Image: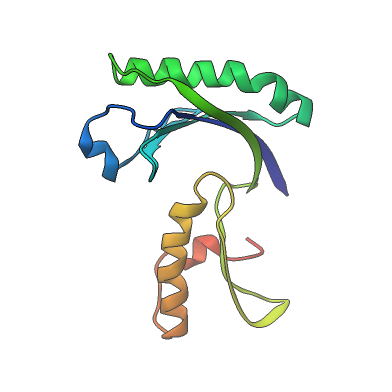
Length: 153
């Protein structure tokens, strides 16, 4: 079973003044809903999170402005004095598995295929683990965490 979640993000105008150390970081807290921020290649600050249950496309459109304001307030609490001027905001939907974990490895219905299906907001993170797991499988090496990401769990 897959669960759908609405996600929200906004990005600053170009040239925002921030500590240069942030240019190489992805900041992600562990609250629910979480908050994350990172810089972009064109000198913007991207702030995202405020995820909520997805109900409809109308919900996304009607909630986008409020959620962007919420994200900006959280950013200002985290980084007092920042001058964040929103340039673009958006909303989207992502799916996740029932247990929140990806599917990584062989699937019984597809011989000679290995999968890395990192659903949800942690898809990139899980893909890094997936690369290691698949490499180990191809080299016929044991992997301590592959069991947790198997199909049909």
